[in-house]
Image 1 (cartoon, rainbow, N blue to C red):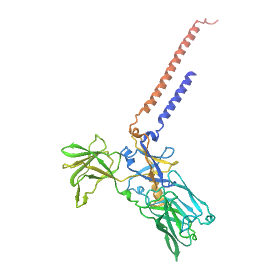
Image 2 (image 1 turned 30 degrees about the vertical axis):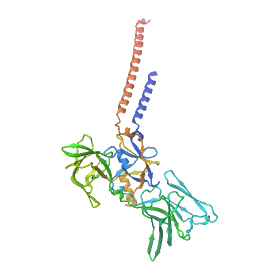
Image 3 (image 1 turned 180 degrees about the vertical axis):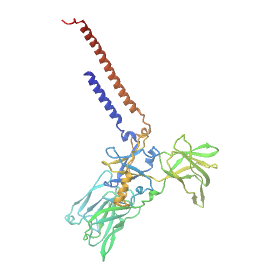
Image 4 (image 1 turned 60 degrees about the vertical axis):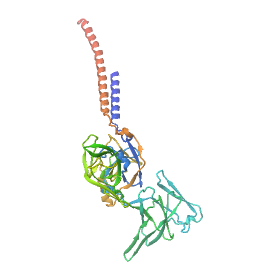
Length: 473
């Protein structure tokens, strides 16, 4: 009975050990940093977030498999990386905005007889609006003022587009005000006009209200000129300005060190991170014309590979005007960490190597509870494959080619495991499991031998006793 209890105890220990060793490590152990993701809307379903330099500096693997998007429970959600030129990586031209109705405001003065109370969450989203009546006449005012929440939109908004329920005839002007705190409102230098007229089978339709360029406010208030024309708004969306800005390259400028190499002026540079380098340029002070060769490698001990050149970079300052050569395009995207620049003539001064890249986009599915976070930077974690590209393409097929995932934005980075995430994990789990199994086998064998030793003498004594017993009576 004692042996059976010990065997059961050892079995339970081995099962517990195997389960513990098989449990996956959490994001805080495997990844260096995380970025909370701010969603432009709560019901987007699928979202896109543009990577920035802080994420690229943390990425470790050359194939960019060491990032994930995780939900509130810490579980990875389906995500995929898209190049800037892919359709799903393009910024949406229009996104839906939350909106609320308010009592009418007199055209010649501030709101009278009511006050506005808004409920704002920790990320600045407007969760609810209450118009509290403080005067006897305010209760009779029509609810035809629109309060639009643009607090989660970071791109510049060029116009608002409104949809409404069918009406017989509509021709209504609006004045537009902006605020960053729902308290102080400033009139914007623009006016809107909504028109929906029909005659003899023809329709005149105007849904857009243009906004002034270069002015971005968190909240917009649209007040009609008249209160005698009813309009039932059904949706408000923002047209985003400058959606093609992401196509222009961003630059990392590196300072290097001078090294001797075959009698040439040579400079070596270290690039921190996995930037998708597509263009290169050299910045050198003063007038110059230098023929350069650019090489790179991913390993500090690996062979150098030619990436560009020989090509001539020049700069001439004349009569207060400066002219210089353009950037050099690479044949392919390069994510190497080490770069070497060589000149065919002596160089006067220290050149700076400029590496141009276009940020890539991560598209993820809103699976599980928010908030979501992007985690990145690991020497051991690998993102699992997901059918997200096929899924989103199917949605575009159903909703139209113009459909895009809703924008999401990177918050301030937060340290998780830090540099410890880049240390290779020792494969001690299998060794520990085998050690537990071998130890259990040895213990079971020892108890079996002990049992045999106790059984043999007892059997011998019984045989001797039988031999001394006289034969039949």
